[in-house]
Image 1 (cartoon, rainbow, N blue to C red):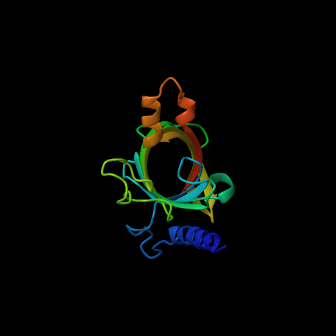
Image 2 (cartoon, rainbow, N blue to C red):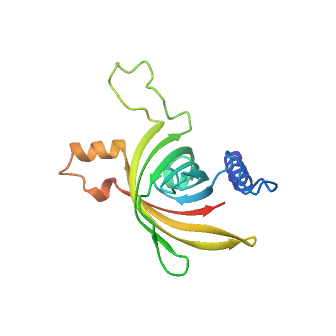
Image 3 (cartoon, rainbow, N blue to C red):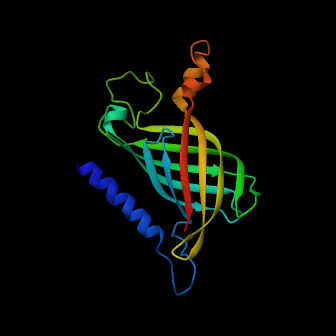
Length: 198
């Protein structure tokens, strides 16, 4: 129960902070996020959410997402934090304020909390026996998104739905070492998400 309360408080904090603006100047302060994201799956939790920033030319996004995997889906109830960077070189305007991003490429670094995960292996393992940490997972993905203008509290905002096809280091290495036994579908995860401009 404490874990659910912690996650609820975290999500509320980010969504309420995200809408805080400098009313006098009419501009967001530098530390106020440009958008928030809510994501389903993607090797970073069953559901994850958090704030993000976008570059001036609107091609590079950086996000910090807090995720949760319920016990019934993962064996343990897991809490994660993920830093993501997404590069989207093309944006195609469509009719009725719609726009399409046909291709995105991104990388992430995920950390999973819990005593069963190690940042470095315990000393009773021989040096070099394992080369990876169980708490950190770097990964990569490709994807795309479609967006449109919406009105939220009488203010025009942009909302985008996105998808990502991704994998992480250990799965990719297993595929390279065992191409006869693993297919691409065995190592690729599909994620869906919603991004709302602030």
